[in-house]
Image (tube, rainbow, N blue to C red; front, side, top):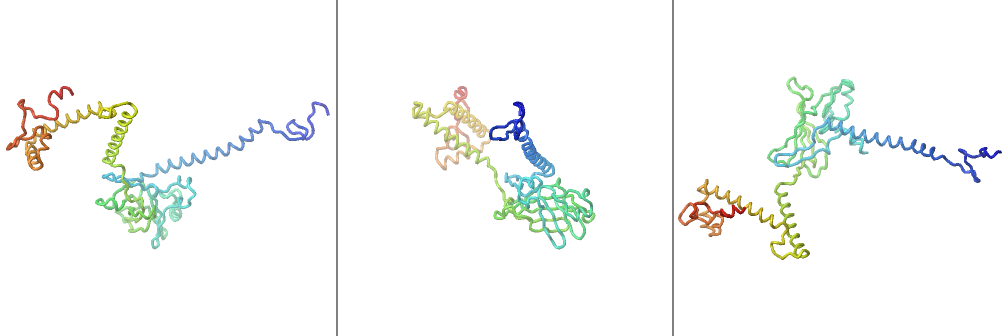
Length: 342
């Protein structure tokens, strides 16, 4: 063969003594793209579909949480079933609606969301496209009734006097029942710490349904109370001041006294301001509530004269009014010179 001919047995114009086959770089990249693009596309499609289903579920649901007036909180979101849960979990039960059988009737239910799957009886009776969405369906003997509309959901307590008993979720606007009344459904979520998520136990009623359900999610959980937040804030501030004073004395050469406390000048200014405000309030109370002076006098007589300083010099014996200085003003924690300096 001539020098320009391709040796036999070679591939892509390259051959060696061992007759090994070589692959062009551009073909290798093309092969990788052919394999990677479908895989990446499938992953993106699944993620977009999952997010889309979550958006649809959010639009077709209502908040599955409740906060009572006394800041008692409940979160029952784990009971709601939706298509997004079916896409993100391998548990087959997460894709099934709640089901309760009673005599000749079957009830298909969901919480904070519409029922995911339309019952076969309803589809056979109305047609797939004509079955309205509902939070529950009652089927049996060739009939199909809607148990309530999602947009009417309303939370309340089972017992307003005892929030720990549980919650009540009410839906109205179901199928017509007796000409004057539409079907409605009340979920009675009873607090049972040992029941975990639980499931509907029974359905009572014919027009105004009551679904009993024991679940640990109906037990109240309290958020951070204001007093607890203030307490922890004060403890944190105290720890900061103590640690700061120790660091200033040990490493910054400060004298071991009050001046070693961090921001001591600001604390002195703030304390003076607070005492000045309290003094003004004290003067107003003595001026507009004369009986308050009598109470202070009685306390001083009972418990000693330690309250004299609080009363701005105390009360004169045998008098119901506090003693005043020659200038006629009620003495407080700060005098006029102190206020001017402040």
